[in-house]
Amino acid sequence: MTQDEKKQAVARAALELVEPGIVLGVGTGSTTNCFIDLLGPLADRLHGAVSSSEASAERLAALGVRLLDLTDVGRIPLYVDGADEANAKLHLIKGGGGALTREKIVAAASERFVCIIDDTKRVETLGRFPLPVEVIPMARNHVASRIESLGGRPVPREGFVTDNGNVILDVHELRIDDAPGLETELDGIAGVVANGLFSRRPADLLLIGSEQGVERF
Ligand code: 5RP
Image: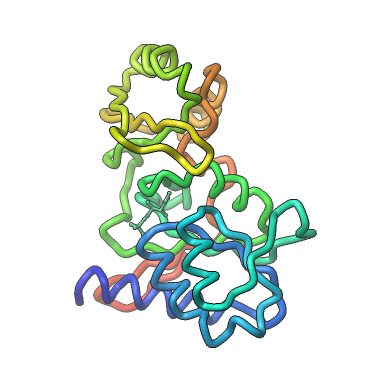
């Protein structure tokens, strides 16, 4: 089974969790795109979707899914999104697509966060994937030097500007044993908008596409 087939399989499994009439939170990335592409026939039966990025919003709109602003929405019963890494505690690294801040906001506002990945993303210890950190542009050097003092090697994501007008530092060489502790510490650096650790608000359900089918944790 190819990686793409695994992504399609988890997307189909997530679709089964979508109930008619709900407000759906929708993430960003190639796995989430597989999920979005299945939503077309359901578009009329959804109340609408809150998107975590401009790219996903465009894809949803093209399928006729009504887009909702988070500020106008009371509750989001279900949020479906991918990840770059996931461990057994359902702690995640996200932000490979650069949408981490809005993803974190939608995840925080959601009652149930269902994360969909293929089995290449399952890890014992987070940190093999460089940790994305969204930073206010003027704070880039300040944040980079604070991250270096924590043992990370921050690399600016060249030519990339987030939907919020900020820059991303991809932090290499972090071994993340205490994800909630590091998540809090990074958020405490002046100039950091958000970091890609999702451990204080982890996934509620992890669907993993593998050779065995879709595994649920
Ligand atoms: C975007 C994300 C994505 O969910 C993450 O990068 C995984 O993407 P893909 O499904 O393309 O591997 O966090 O900010």
